[in-house]
Length: 251
Length: 207
Image 1 (cartoon, one colour):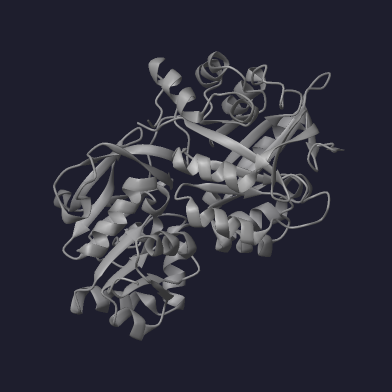
Image 2 (cartoon, helix red, strand yellow):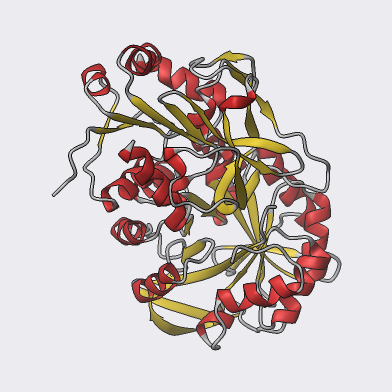
């Protein structure tokens, strides 16, 4: 049986592991390499690593860092941050990424995402969608939550699926870092709208809410950061809990 | 010191050669990444990694003249071959992704789309169990029914059931490990499947 993936998200700026609340109030949570080593020892299902400064400072993800991480981790690795060319993707995949995560460029240029899926296969392209709840519908933001777009929520998701991305990470900016639970309603909407896997992100704080999100929203994976950085809980603790509740996880 | 085996990873623009190479180096071997005829024919173990679509994969093999050289290596010289993910699928007779395409035809079979109900998502991404049908040197010290990492929407339907060494369930049972003589294929990514995946690669290199 296919397992629900329990994925730690590691946000970094230079070599520092960071975590914010609502994409602001960033605080340092240690060193990125140290965190990666711990997750490698713990044999987590997968890692998502995002350079939060790349897009806004027009930098690229440090390829040596990618290489160093890939040399130690024999699990799937998704890297993101500032990706806006075929060369960026090719560089990251060569350096050791298995998938790349694209947010801002996916808001600005569907043609680029189409070319990326065609060139590298849809399994390698993960779209990341950040949103805040609005009056009537969710508002999509790019550039690490700093730029409000005019994209329509449902049509953006449908377009990304049509273009061919392999999966979508859906992050609620309102929930990010709050640890008060995933935005289950929006995740439900996304999984009923789309056929590709959806990764829940933003708000993980309790095991009960993680269970509820999997059960009610039928997401394929749950990503989380604060709960692992700032509490004693590990991905294995989450899995043991979910396993007891009859959710298929890899133990 | 690298162990004395001539391990070759096929370079054809379609594979995650870096990840496969890292896993093999970690085991103490010194693989080369190449698509040259002389490297292929002088190797002891060939790994054919691949991601992407079947039709594109075959056209890349043709672009580098790999089709004929790979067939010669395994059929005439008996060199061991392991296909990973799309690399496994390319071993089949015919693929039906995007358009009907002739494969390497090393193991008789076809590549078809996973036929799952609307409850299940495609691609099939994540960790899923592999059940063994048989014992084999490839599976030494790997427990039955362990999880491996998959990313795919198509599967290998072998013509002969005896070629199926392991299978996985995702809405349907499909072949996840295939074998005929010196030719092996795995639908999952052993290089990304932590210790048992690495063990499978090690077992292959020891055959």
